[in-house]
Length: 178
Image (cartoon, rainbow, N blue to C red; front, side, top):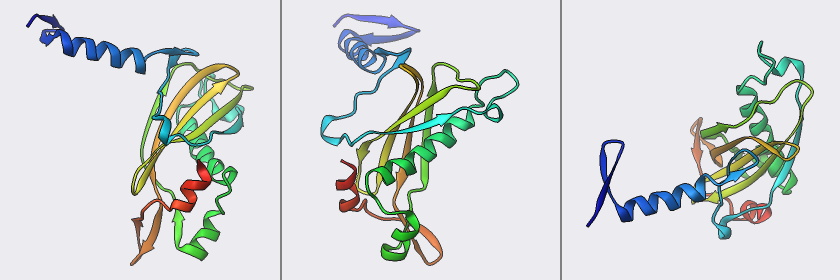
């Protein structure tokens, strides 16, 4: 079996071909950055949360300070559930003991900067529903230009003995979000 060397390692042609196929799917250009294609059976509806960038959102270089994107994605997560018809967290806590969906993991990739005066849209969907966690995908756009993408892993939680405990994703909430 023929092998080639990439960065000092030897790789078979089959592995190299699989790597090229993976890269072509994950790094296909879309408004200046890669696009992720979620599994079609697991897609949810997509909601749009609008942000008007304020002067105070920017750093001395006059670009949005990167933690603000996380803040906007967090707000877009709550907006997603409200737009899908999920009751407010306080109501869910009173009726079902569900405190909310705290963030367990976040990954953000930046492609282009934003600045004061920009109107941004955060497009949010659930990329994957697992037994106790789900992954939300956020795409931040200025017009048709993709500025950044983020993925958040979250869980529905209840208070048990004063601590937060992940519970299975409620089927009725999942159904509202599809």
